[in-house]
Length: 245
Image (cartoon, rainbow, N blue to C red; front, side):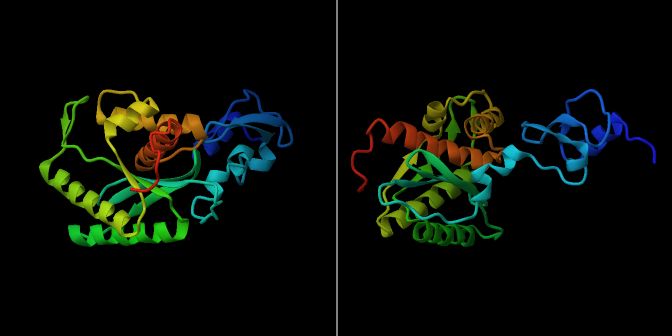
């Protein structure tokens, strides 16, 4: 059997978005430096990762491990659900005080607007019951993003406004305090940069990577940004003095 080359290893790793940093390959048992798809340095042998790529840092990332697991809440903790609302894909993030404990997206496939809104409402009710929420943060709806000059279509704006009303009514029915977070406000709190909507979404994803060392979708990133704003700005500065509406 011929000896594998460094170039062949690079091609194999490329399929999983990994990289080899070491510039010389000696044999299967020689420790080398690699970089995983999350940008972490991995020091191991080709023998150990040639069939299955394992990054110790990623393996120890608790956020990934508990992403779908419902966690018991301490009575001393204020648990916040942050929502990047949309009628098809809603990003969400849950914080215990200022600690991010889980995140994800809820997707609806119905073609009818009312059916989608009803699905989101039922999902929110299940989140309230399962996660013992103390507060919900909802992204505000705006017709125009003043900073970028991009206008949201009137039809989309009306749909999101109706959905926002449904979410607010659901919070009221379950006696859960809620906060409407204007987009420009929470982005400013997080330090989001960029001129266009796409630039700002990418900036938020990079901030999440910097803060938590996780790679997320733009919907998840925005939800995390809303939660970060609420927990690190409003609560820390005692702007929310009473958790009752």
